[in-house]
Length: 426
Image 1 (cartoon, rainbow, N blue to C red):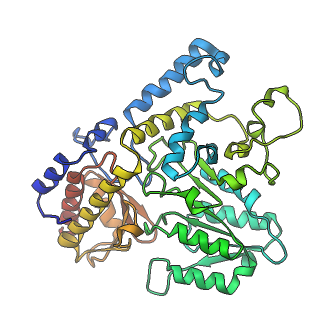
Image 2: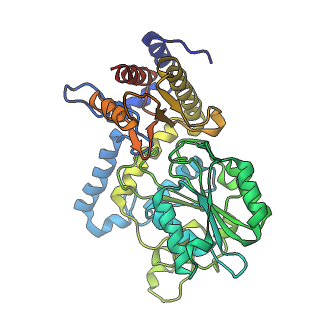
Image 3: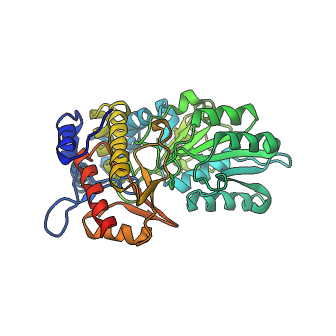
């Protein structure tokens, strides 16, 4: 669409925004003078849904009033509480309800998935990740290799952008698989690369992996709640995500996991087992013969923390009321394109954007590099914070900015660029 400069255009876009009312569903942090921050950091920690307090308090009240009986005969009993999140979670990732489960944390789930899906042989033992993977993913993969007695120097393949470039190219991934595909056991890649904001072509990568006999999994920490996903239809083997970024469920909240139905129904797959993954009908017989649930729930270990699940349910209810990823993605594309328009127009001489321009290859995050000679990127970031902007800094040289469609306005974007321009011109 055609954008215009000036604050009135931003306000006009906000007046016409069918999702504008959902901003009131969230608590916006304030500055010392009581005015709202320009909060563009949902890629790191989403804002608190106002109803999360009520949902969590309901469980605290239930605990106080019912004690252990809260597990059973009441509204939203604790025993099956994670099941109340399955449908909304499945809708967000394009899955069947029996393919998703809310459990553990992201890195724990990656480890659990690799126990099942990384089964190295003498011929196939290598794992492919991106060179600038999120450190926790890199640590997890290296430790899995070492657990199997494989030196990461031999078993880890790193995908790197070409010299002078920031983004991964699909043709380079294809070349790597053509050259070393017979030795690759697992591709573990991000849905959205955390540093650059690049959306990887997950469907194409899955087809490429399977065509070469390779298992593929995705870290969707920056993708879930941000970009449309169709994990079941894409035939992805597994995926994991956290819930505290775009899913707004609170710091350190319980994560999610996807296992494709063709795997989930195979109860003989190797896995680390715990009693919450055991057949529900016989769980309380306290027998020592594990029988996996034939769904993604079969990878559960222990009963989950209910207070955290309550906060997730609060956020997922808002996603459902907003109509899911369709309307959110449409607004997100406009917000991000408007941000790009203003950045190029107002501070193009100071800022470069390393995130792809193609909307199909990005979510709501734009990663900015400071090109000004009179200040560093870190200094620019600090000036933004001093002037009421919350975004985030990632070494070595990126300011990440993410206008989130559930609670950010077009005027937030306008005011951010206005603040950025003033900081650059000081």
